Image (cartoon, rainbow, N blue to C red; front, top):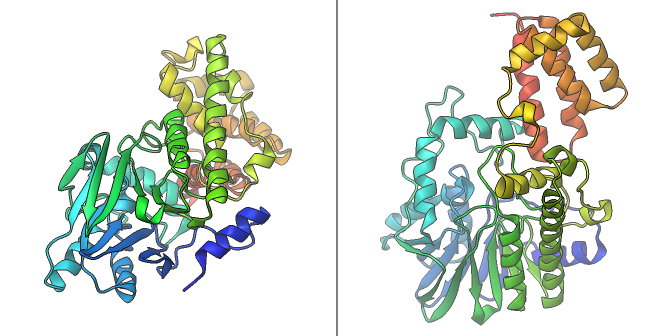
Length: 434
C-alpha cells in the first residue's frame, strides 16, 4: 500500500508537485485505523464499524467493480451503508457493483444515504441524457479510453449516460443528519458548492472529514462552462465549517488524503479564501456597474496562489468561476445590449466577412494572430469565417489548426476539452468522405 499521507504531506509542505496527486490506481490504502481509500475516479472512502462498512461514494460505472474488488482485499465486512457525497456520475455510477457484491455475499443490500436533492439530480440526468453524453464526450473525449472518460460506451449513443441500475437513495436528509452504524456516529452536513446536493461528513471518533468534491487537488470546480450553477460563496462557507472542527484527517473524493490538523487548516482555509476573494471582487465590480467583459478581464487569482499544489487550474479555472459568479448574482445577460437579442451567428459572420472583403481575409488575419499568440482573437475570426462559409474546407482546416494550438496552450481540462472538441468537428469536415 502507498503511504498516501506521507506523500501529501511532502507535496503540501514543500509546494513541489513531483508526483501525481490525482491518482487513479484502483489500489486500496489504509490511511488510519479502520479507514481506507480506494484511489479511483472518484475515490471510495471506507470506514470499518462493528456492524460492517460505511462507504463514501461508489466511483463511476466504469470503475465500480474494480473499486469493490480492491475494497475486498482490505476487508471482508459487508457494506452496510453507502453514502453519496453528491449525485455526479463518478460518485453514484459504481453503486450497482456494491449491490452485486452484497448479493454475492448473501448480505442485505447496502442502505444508500444522500441529500434529498440527489433524487432530483438523477431525474434531471434521465431527462437530459443526450445532452450529458454530448458534453461529457466534448469534455473528456480527447483523453481517449481511460478511467477519466465518462462518456457512453458506444459512439452511437445507445448506452445511457446514467445507467438504469444506479441505486437511488433509500434515506435522504436536508440540513444535517447523524448516522449511527455499529456504534460509530457519522455526522452528515449539506452545503451547496460544486453541486446543490453535496454532503460532507464528520466522523468525530476519527477526527476525520470526508469532503467529497469540496477539495479535488485542483482549482475548485466552481465554474464548469457546460454544467449547471455552482455556488462558490457557500462552498467557501462549508470549507470554513470543516476547518472549525479541527480535523486531523481530510478525505477528498479526488486527490490525496491529508493528515495533520495544521496542514488541513491551511488547505481548507486557502481554498475558502480564494473563492471568497473572487466572489467579493466580482460583486464589488457588479455593484459599481461593470459589465461581464470588464470583470472577466480584470478579476484574476495571483500566479503564486495558483501554483499551490491543491489550487492548480488543471481542471477548472478562475475565469470560468467569474462567469459563474456573474450568472449566480446577475443572470445570463452580459450587459452588452447587442447581445440581449442578437442576430444569428451565421448572419453576423456573413456581415463581418463582407466588410472584411471576404472569408479569405478573415482566415489570413486569424492565422497571423495565432502565429503571434493572440489565440482569443484568432478564434473569434476563424469562427466568423467558418460560420460565413460553413462548407469551406479551407476555413475548417484553419479552424482545426487554431483550436489544436489553443488546446495545447490551455491548462484546464475544461478549456482543453472544448477546444479539442471544436478541432475534431472541423477535422471531420476536412476529411474525405469514405
